Every structure is written in structure tokens, then in C-alpha cells.
Length: 138
Image (cartoon, rainbow, N blue to C red):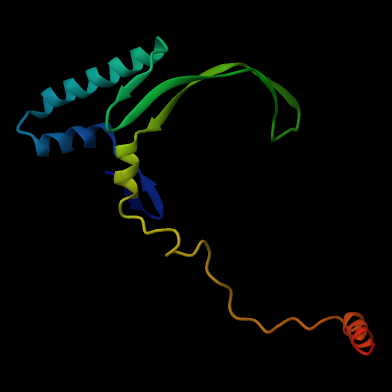
């Protein structure tokens, strides 16, 4: 399971997934490991063939294509040609989003930022207050 260790989130590993499934079911770990490995292998092969994978309740996997572009080496500042590439992309399904967000409070109930300490009103510059007095005198 993902857990917080020294201020950083640590993700669930494949062996932890196998362990968790073994705890929930009465199936031996060796059999679960085979199923998990075959599932990941099937997903990887389908993505390699550029097939879209949709798992109801979880989400979908697909390959996204990115064209070549001119990048910049951050260390030297020199222009670098970046080759076109294909990258896997995961889009979570509605059920997964709802599950994850079920414990989140409404945004209206939680401020986007902590309010600053109450401050005294800022005095107007003298030029403006003099201008105000002359306008009001008319």
C-alpha cells in the first residue's frame, strides 16, 4: 500500500499487491503471482500493439504520440533535438475518481489558502489624500 515515509509517499509494489490479494483470497501466493504477471504482460503487449485497454471501474490505458521538438539542455543551455516518442497514458474511470474523492470535503468548505493575518488598512499616499481634499472642497 502507498504509505508516507519520512515525508514522501511510497507506492505499493507488485509483491505487496500479491501479498494483499493472498490475504483477501484463499489462493496460494505462487498462483496469484502467476496471474498478476500474466495480467501485466498482457497489458504491456496490448499497449505495444497500440491497443486501447479499458477496465470498467478502474480506467483506461492508451498510447499517446508526441512529435519531435527542439528542447534545451538545462545545464548548458544548448539546443537539443528531441526525437518523437510514444508514452503510455492512464485515464481514471468515473468510479475510481468518485472513490478517491469521496473523503474530500467540498471546496467551499475548505479555503484554497490560509487567510492572512488581519492587517491595518493601508494609508493613502499624501498626494492622493491632498487630491481628495481639494475635490471635496468644491
